[in-house]
Image (tube, rainbow, N blue to C red; front, side, top):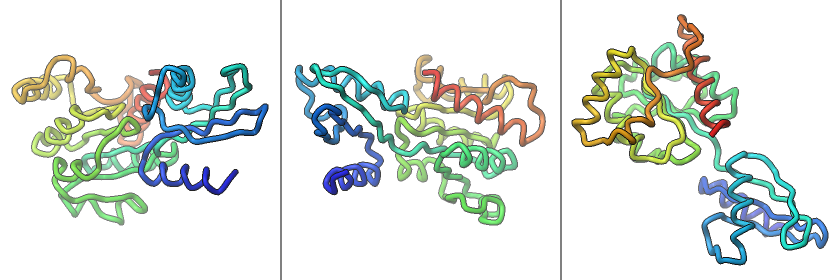
Length: 228
């Protein structure tokens, strides 16, 4: 790979900016494409294939403009923000890291959000709404609230529901969710916006222990990522 192409790919990754590497196999020509930038009518088919590759997170090969074309996606890293440094969060952080996610745990309670409880995980001890201002949730981000405390969970959910995060989940019973929905409605959120929230969080697998609940949450995040 030419040095210039590698520099472009590294720059996009550093900026969490998705891009694709286009290779014309017949000629050996290659270049980096950032979907959404400088798209004209002639490039529409290439842009569509690039978005398809990024969405599937898989390489594609296609006959494009009469040439054999290989499209390799370079997505921004997957990221999981866990609000609440609780036992479920400890297991969920480990599960997410094993699935390739960058994990951030947000909790102002520093006795819970400690290196000893979350070794190797990025910790943020600001209040969730302030923390998420700097985290900037994007289309490769998932967020889960686990505290059961509206003072911590609600501000995080409000920021997430206004973001393009691909997954937003909240721990709690159906009764807790009903009360949460009323608060979100009072805060001005529409039914469509609230419908993005997965709650009670996790797939219904009969989970009981913190470890099992974490598995159910990670499974739902994965299903949302891969099946949409």
